[in-house]
Image (cartoon, rainbow, N blue to C red; front, side):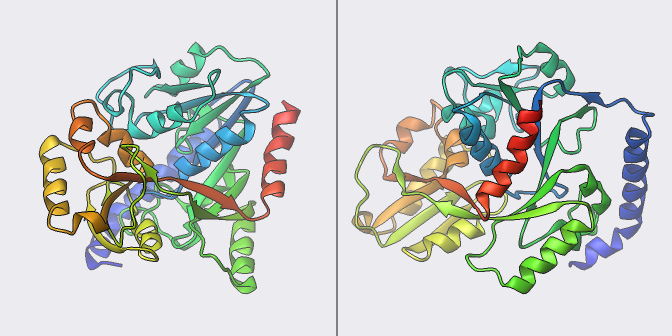
Length: 341
């Protein structure tokens, strides 16, 4: 842990006090929390940065699409618009945010994707019945609304029970906030977890009243942006604007020599940056090199003004999915709630 974080310890203590008071007021009913009618599932975390909420939201969409109409409500981080918007094919990442646009690309025709900074107002605008499931993306700290079921997402490599509140650590609120969830899903787990490690994580979760599940990233085949076949490349130019690209880089290094151009999370790409990326590509052997990015990054890269430039080069998307250990038990826990409602 860097020294400057400890220097800011007094600020961390103040932040801890403020969040404790805020949560205590909600717990005591001093601050009003609106319970959502019907089926609603909150996906969130305690820490800042990427922990795998988006893949879980997509996983739940697909898990229940055959039996329910899915509605997703997100804040739409990084969008240039305000207010409540229901996504349509005309929207771009700048309008609604990259993650909601990614959800929209994979929804069923009857499903709905919404963005709004005012979740209470947005929920009031939705048409809902017993066949709907509302997924609240990144709403764990948004206590003005209360979902019927909450899933806490925590990076296996930086579990919430080992972390500290900002700015000493990366927690948005004290660890005890985990008690509001119904279960915890540890994400980005290694391929093999020892029995002792799994037991320790499970016991730590149980201390907060949570049942623990474990998941890892599953990488699907690369998808061409331009429709060209995947060449027999040995080198990949990886372009990312996500919080933690290291797992993806590690995966690609099993197949390619990787050169990485890294931008900040939710980075808004410009034409000049795309030209610089292509200029970098041109320094490599073209027949042996491809450009790889993430699904979420491509939502921003595919803007109308950028796409013509992308179409001239061999861009590929790396889709990811969740592989959940004891998946049937995980889904049964959620289905029991859904059936009850």
